[in-house]
Length: 237
Image (cartoon, rainbow, N blue to C red):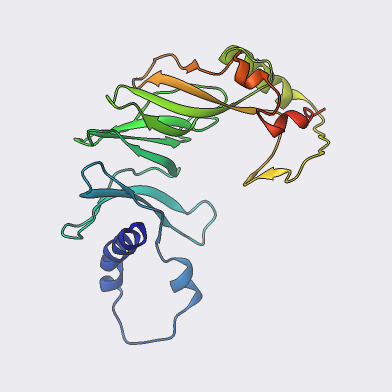
């Protein structure tokens, strides 16, 4: 089903461009392939009628790529609608249970790390940043009543709050050396080197300025052996 929706989205979004560039048959060029819009996995809404997909519009120029979120109907009966229009891409889209808003992660403006943004689907309007954690946020999930968000963040060992995380982050960034020794495998997690940070679960009211609460800090779960293999990785030194 997701593959079908992604295919529908790709066809619908690419159709205007294809029609505008209609011409005599010719060989496919590198530019044709490279600049073809690329559609991410669809996130279907609670009622099953709408879906959100990320669409990447590649470019040859440096920093020319554009990645935005689009809203589509899963039956293809209406034209897609662009929801975001920023140079920075979005990820981790999550529908509010009533379908009235979405949450996603992005790094915009002065953000140093990804934060959670909430966009009212009734629109028009801009997405509002609701988190402000120095360690960033990922994978937001709505509470059943749509008032709270749960999400993940990578925190530093021993840090009891965001002030401590921020201080440790700044101290490490100011070091003139950065060496780590590993006795585990793999030593990379997708696009980053593994370090001694641990994944913690946070909850926060889904409004700007609300305080995020770390549910795991100081708990027996994270203090016990085996919580995270990253504990066997020494801090950079």
